Image 1: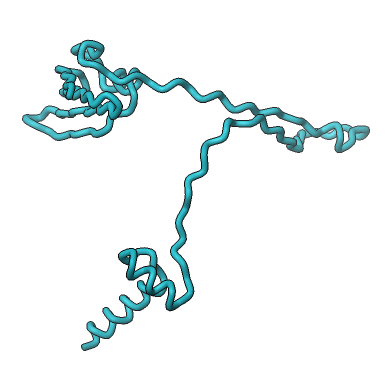
Image 2 (image 1 turned 30 degrees about the vertical axis):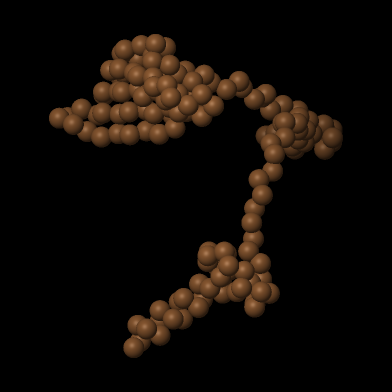
Amino acid sequence: MVLLIACIALGAGFLILRPQALWGPAAAAFAAITGTTAKTETPTPAEPPKPVEKVRRVRTGVRPADSTDEDREVTVKIIALPPTAPLPFPLAQEVARGMTRSAVLAGFTAPTATIAGADIGHLQERLVYVDPPSGRATWIYLVDGKVSRAETFSP
């Protein structure tokens, strides 16, 4: 009986604190009764980086008697690096046998999926790349961190 009461209290607390977690119509009905609405976050578009100026006071170990506070202010202009060009989609003929995993990840875009496992004391990995516009998929097979083979499939 105590367990049932605890479950009901926990469920009611969950409904009051997190109504957006409910199924859509149920959440809308609950929100209409309680007067709360589900909070949704809309992503903001990325803006190009702007130069930033920072002023920082610098403390020196020895302060001359004739120095003022203005002598110790330094203005630093920080400029963010521009965005880099996207990395290419890998094709089987572009992936050489024996390439290291780090070389594959540095030379091509991030894999869509990574599958890893161990077999007979060897680390077996498969990097799966999918190119949505063309529908192509490239599977890169790695054994102990080195490419053993690569295959590209077309739709």
